[in-house]
Image (cartoon, rainbow, N blue to C red; front, top):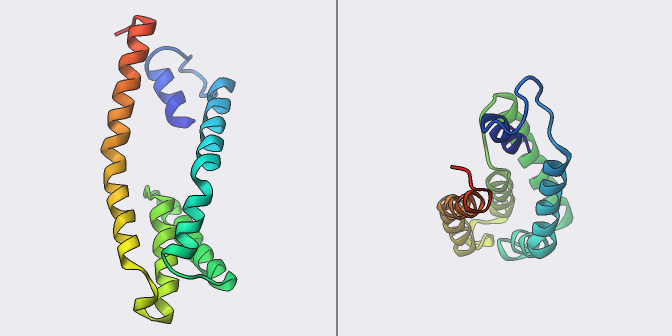
Length: 140
């Protein structure tokens, strides 16, 4: 929401004197997150907890606590970090405490490939949306 609002200010669509997130940006971001969670959330949880390694509830708690501690520390230092990377690393770490073969490293490798593909795919999708919006609105 902050990035979208900053872009709206940079584009001259919002007043630069006050950084107020418009309600439609809040609702749009909430809808996008909700739809994404609805469509793929359980698949991600299932992959992380059952396909990557078998986690028991206390191990999941440890992974989430460790991942949360890392994310909090990194955010406190002002360094950008992906929550998905931190949590999946913590899950693999917890799984590896039993034995290294307890982690399905092939699944982990596919996760890394997906992360590498995500950045250029997001950039391409953003370019397509920008082209569509500029043609519809007639700016640019």
